[in-house]
Length: 270
Image (cartoon, rainbow, N blue to C red; front, top):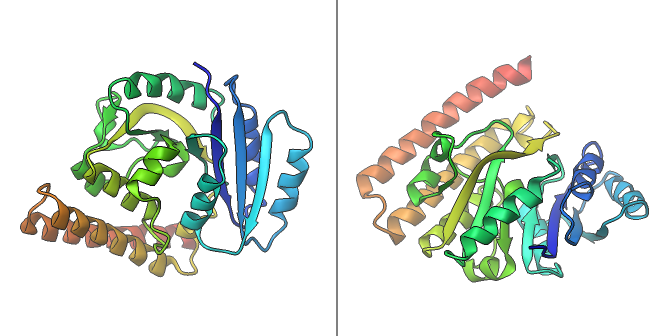
């Protein structure tokens, strides 16, 4: 079944990667209509000019929207709210898709919504296999799964605008862990998240804040505070974890922070 799909690409200073990203979407083997919406979130480089060039030489519909810098949540939200179609996918400007990404996900998505009308679908990004897929099978994500490891990455998401609005959209006040916060609220509402055990997205840029020495500690600490906030949300709004488990999770997140900082500092130092 062919459907019209809106693809949202948040972009900030993405000159090095955005062309490969957009071209991977243009080159999808999916025969249905793809509306590509690139949201320039206040970039100070000339990445928007590269998108303008692609607009004039491709076979897909591309919209370039520009706004003051609001962060990735604000850019994704702005794109979703300006999308023409109800079916939405996301892709970060330093990621790209394999050619059959849309077709593979959509086939399974139609099977799922026949039984579970409100479902968000993700897949594997690169070789980062989530524990829920450790038996090399597709699986639904539970709230507890999400507390151990956030998933799926937004560049793999396929969902309806109706679901997005029903969950309450991204929390635009958050600068870190906004995607995990959205997934958590979705699961707390009793909706479903499905993970395909198939790698359909790959990272093409390693210049994300995670890999920079400047602000390394601050970014990692913000991520851990985001993890703790989400665990608290689950503790206060469900019976999934008790107080003791909440405390254990906080210690687990702090331990991960220490290991990340040690490993990443070695990486940055070369």
